[in-house]
Length: 440
Image (spheres, rainbow, N blue to C red):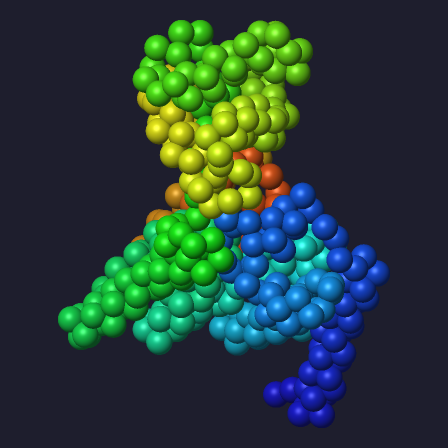
């Protein structure tokens, strides 16, 4: 049995090391200060194309405009991140009996996005979405590990806030449904459980929709959801556009957008690179990433802004965003249906790129397949953690690639989680001393 005095000293050393990690992160955050993105102004001005989560957080943390800086906004987001990461690592320490080396390593992994991506410094929704994601993950795992319905309810509610900050996390609804099925399977009172779980899940979904509409009613006098999906979905549709697609359009504005796009593809060298290069998958993803903002902001948006201005609609208003969405969404669906094979190929290559190209993608799906088998055979905490990490990674990739470029700012949440799971397994192997077996 270990000497209590030595054990107490080890605990103190662990705490000192953890505090040093947090202190270093805070100093790094202070050094870089507030970093603005192109999206920052949209959140600050409460643009109708943004959901309510981060704009309202800005208003509250700046005392509704009395503080002319977003420094307190990002500071509070960082403090929340420290609190959430600390609680989550303690949770992992408790359930996996982590040694001080692994505790420090897991803390570093979950704080690492602040150093590599400046998450806590960027004045965009990621600064608050990241701690909310970690908090949601904490309660998701707690619910799955302990068959705890109260933790599941907390997970549903935090997820509702997270989606209100970043609609990217809509894929968590699929995880919620799987969690409900899992808890019902282990529940002794299935009727009461399904009422509690399904009821709370439904309330969380209604909250997301109602809060979004109420926000736009207060700010933009329209009780409608955020209008932005069409502007994203139109990009892959226009990327795969073909001559003769104007025949698909009955609406004059749709035909105008298609004609403008085809003209630019042929006339402008920036766009014309799409037709002048070999269609290797790597080239396709590179060109798509290069052209994404050009198609979305310069081509589609500029044409529609000019056309809508003639109807008296001004940029920055809710009616303007709504009009763009009503034009682009059905047009995108038509073009995608007309060129299913081209769209499927582009989508597959984007997913492959997001997962790390062929080798890593194949390795990921092998790991995912083994995680499913191991879950049904063992059903222990390690297999649950691995399976959840794989599901989150896959669902995130599939959703992001549907609407956006697979940029690191959208993918890092699940990248770092999968890295943490891998390190947890390696760390436990090292701690157990079984690593020596590999030297034989």
